[in-house]
Image 1 (cartoon, rainbow, N blue to C red):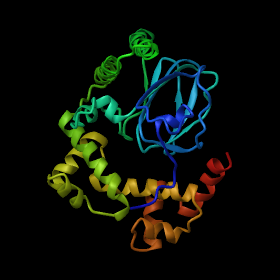
Image 2 (tube, rainbow, N blue to C red):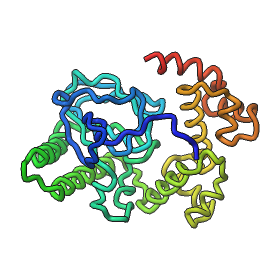
Image 3 (tube, one colour):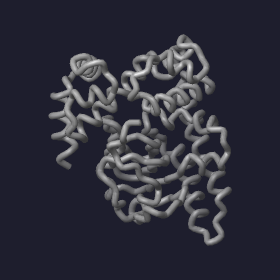
Length: 295
């Protein structure tokens, strides 16, 4: 297994109680202490930032987003996240684990059916009209009120959270005319999960299709429907993403990175990297180290 170069934080770290095993928190920006976490980090949980007023900039794996008022911003486990400014914001953050959302049921499909979670191919920032956002805010306030009660009931919070995410999915389905089949979405996320465990082994699309008990042709159909890319493109993109992280945040040589990601040789790695990013690995390293490592 590849060693992760980023610190993986649980919810306790974000309330500056690293040993607290809490599976759910809701915090307002103006009430929360700045968490003692690295600028660039990974979460073991889901996070929803809700913004009523003000703007912030978020970075997820080299993609920069401006988060505006009347919006929700979703961060999923394993994504590399950097929160730029947050002091001038009005709103807050909801932090919850997969188990909390699923009520400890073993069937993950209900979580995978939510197109905006665990999906680098959809925009994590969802903007609402003022009226739609008021409906969303009301649900958030009910969650907040329940969490503050001395006799708070976890099942009530879980129910509100599930309603909130179902509302968001309905908003997306209403504003986006191309609705992807739930079955494809679930299979795509299953593929992404297996890919997360094996991307560094440089396996073929056929290997992943076999793991999912489907044909390679069917895996390609699923990937095309969700992302407009082939399965091979997605596999390669995951390797390149890891290469970007290693180039930016470690001092490993380009040859070491190529070896770690199971490329046959350094020149083939450099050629593949350039075809994806329009930069040589060395140029990318110089540019990104200057941008991100000096902070």
